[in-house]
Length: 275
Image (cartoon, rainbow, N blue to C red; front, top):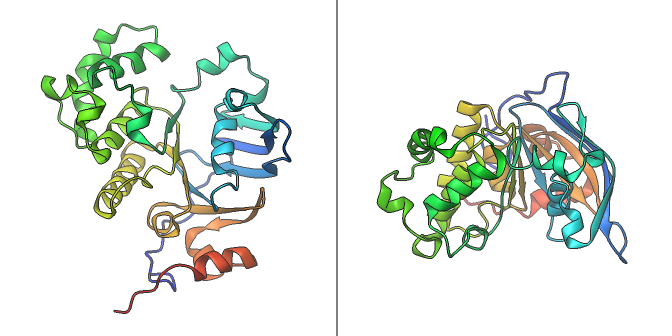
């Protein structure tokens, strides 16, 4: 079945009764009005939720609030963010470090900028392991080849000796996805992960995320302004407008029967190509 826009219908809403993460969140930056206010969202284990909105609507602010990193940018979050039964906003930085990167990982928007240009790819995998585990890296090293193969990257020593500047943007994005999976997190925050990629590579990365979700049952908060990619990847979609969630539901429902005027406006902007 397809939506009226000619898009594939996503899987049935997979949510069980107990969410992986749920939030009632307000957040903003010093000296400015709130960016998001009383945003309510929940995600099930293994779910892919699309968070859609224009630039500046607060999508990345929500991701940084989940990671408890808003203070780095002079921001502050209030409300509740419960992850696996723990209230993240009340955790100390030391406690949060045990979750950040290990149970919740981030795939950022600009892959080349996110990697350290001075370090080899192999060294950066070692640092990603050591930052969140007290176990020796030697115990993880045999799994690294399997992890790289899982995201269609070579595992030969010469690849791991390369520097980020020697990689294409698409390969660098695969490296970041592999790094996000080092500790098998329950949740990945994918913040505009395809915006810097060409159309073919975008499709490959979306297919990769869908496969990893199926095989590893990792939940993904997919942050994007691209409704076509959301329709092809996500189980549900939440529409963010003027700092609030104005509509949320299964992708097939939102695309076929949008209720909010802003959602209808977004859907009307999707190009419709003749057959």
